[in-house]
Amino acid sequence: MPATAASSLQLAAGRPCISSSRRVVTAGAAILGANSNAVSWTKLTSACNISPLEPFRRSFASSSVKFKKVVTRAMSESTENKPVSGLPINLKGKRAFIAGVADDNGYGWAIAKSLAAAGAEILVGTWVPALNIFETSLRRGKFNESRVLPDGSLMEIAKVYPLDAVFDNPDDVPEDIKTNKRYAGSSNWTVSEVAESVKQDFGSIDVLVHSLANGPEVSKPLLETSRDGYLAALSASSYSYVSLLKHFLPLMNPGGSSISLTYIASERVIPGYGGGMSSAKAALESDTRVLSFEAGRKHKIRVNTISAGMNDSCSYLLSTLLISKERFVFWNNLRIVALFGSITCNSNAFS
Image (cartoon, rainbow, N blue to C red; front, side):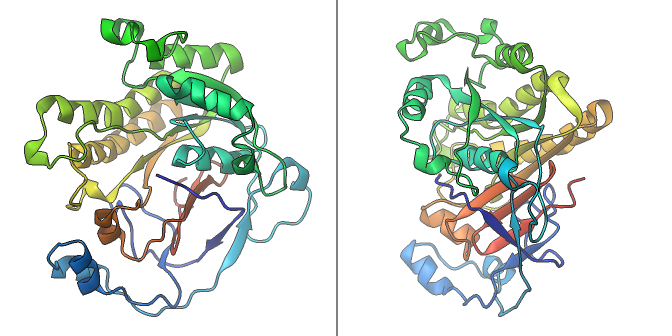
């Protein structure tokens, strides 16, 4: 899913009027774009061959609303002493580990970039089969255009770790994976091993980002999904977050924060989002509530998940209506602010 990083965010103060994950993510401010025109439901449903759903339509009734907007800019080192309009963000001295960065198009990259713009040191975990291509592209400058920060400098990644979050420790890895040529040349890539490597290399982190998921049968309706496909979706998309947090918590400084990415299919029927992925997102949100309680009490770490918007498919368009493809996620002093095109969520309530 492509993500567009921006140098500023438009925030609107006010009560929430829409939330993609109403029980898990309560945004401080969420707005439907100013002076937005109503989307033709008939046209949408006709184009996607899906019959109109009046209750769904009513829940997204549009109106012309005007909001005052302020601009917030992330602070990099070269601008930290200069006046910043809106809400200043300074993560200098903080270290973030982002699991799930394999190119410059995904949410993981956009999150890493915005954290870097705010001054944080960036570590990333890359899926083992994609590691060589990612590191080669990074080294050859193919991502340089995408690495540009608001102050004109390039985002620096302190270290790239091979990671397969489906496996907690070496004993979990089956023989066919161990001998797979795509894993040849890489070592210490299970969750426990990566956490230990980060501890040895850097000692601690302040931010943990889970930006990965996989459903091998995502194109299949739930009724046609196999047991293996269903469980694989939950393992890669849900339990992987539990495992990451479990193994990285000992490394996290008190007051730190962890975030994962969910989707509205966890609570609404989204045709085309199958293979158990909707169940995986529902499990992720449920786990987030429990993890927030447990990690908060035991380790003083905040745990949250946010809905990351849509992609090009028609079913995503139906679920999000006026949300544009451009979206951007960044941290505000270890609190998340997410921009989904015309819908802005100011999550200052995450304290």
